[in-house]
Each structure stands twice: as structure tokens, then as C-alpha cells.
Length: 205
Image (cartoon, rainbow, N blue to C red):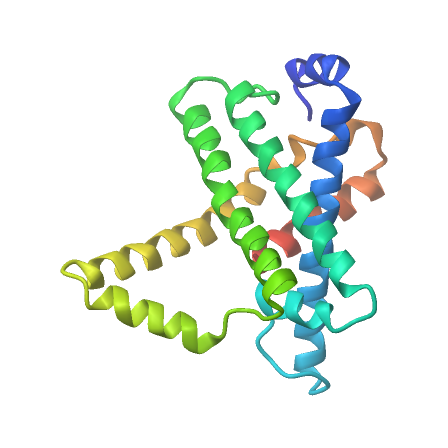
């Protein structure tokens, strides 16, 4: 259920901000859909396995107008990053300044790093014509492991990823995915469908 503060904010927010958030969501959603489709094709033995953001972007580049689509994804995701920063600073959904609210707003700000990786990957594929290979990632990890505190850094990175994964499940379990939706304007069937998609999507992430 959307809070009154959120409704007040939506009445004041400019159309440009609406476009910024929606275009960003469409861009990221398109990329996630392509990853999901490729994973299904790999499961059926039609495509090669391993479908992350960079590999999907590299394959898109091979399609007609693929470069334009990658550019749109990069621009849209960049706009979404700006929106997330705005969301963390202005707090349009009324998360508040309680410890939980501050933690959620910090999490929103930190999520820009993940989306920034998508923008960097898209730019690299668009301008260099190639994605980072698995071997490059392995070399990077091997380099970090040779640092004085390298094993601890790699371990900490693994813990952060694991905690982020668990948080995805907690997020949808607590119903926080409904905070940004005007669920009370839709019927029971629509609300049920949204919750099913929320569980499926956040669990997959």
C-alpha cells in the first residue's frame, strides 16, 4: 500500500522525472528479459550457456540495429542511476531517517554500482566491440588474491554478494516491492500476478 507521503510526492514530481525512471526501468528490464530468454535457450540446448549482462550485450551488437539498442540501454540505465541517487537523497517514498530507513536508502545508493557496471559494459561493447571474457575476470581475481589482503577482499566480496542475494528474498517477503506500486488501484487478480512476478523475479536475481 502506497504511503500518503508518496502520493504527495507524485503530485509534485515533474514529468521529466517520471520519464527518467520509466525509461531506466524499461532499459534494465529489457536486458534482464534477454538474459532470461538466453538462459531458457541454454537450458533447451539451443544456445550456449553463461548469459550475463556483458555477453548478452555482445550478442545484441551482432543483430541489426544492435548498436542503437545497446546505446539506448546505456542511456536508459544512466538515467535510472540518476533516479536512484535522487531516490536515496530526497526519499520520495518516505523511508525516513530511522536506522532501517537509512539502511534502505544506503542500499539504494549502493545499487547504483551494479547498474554502473551495466553502463560500463554497454559502453565497452559499443565502442570496443567486445565484452570482458571469463578469462579476464579470472585474471583480475588472481591479481587481487596476490595483494597483501587479497584473499580477505575476495572473501568479503563473496559475503557481500551472498547477503545481497538474501536481501532480495527478504525484500519481496516483507512486501517492500509493493511500496512503489499503486496496488490499491488494481483488482485482486492483478495484485496476485504482481506478487507472483515479484517472488519469481527477486528470487532469480
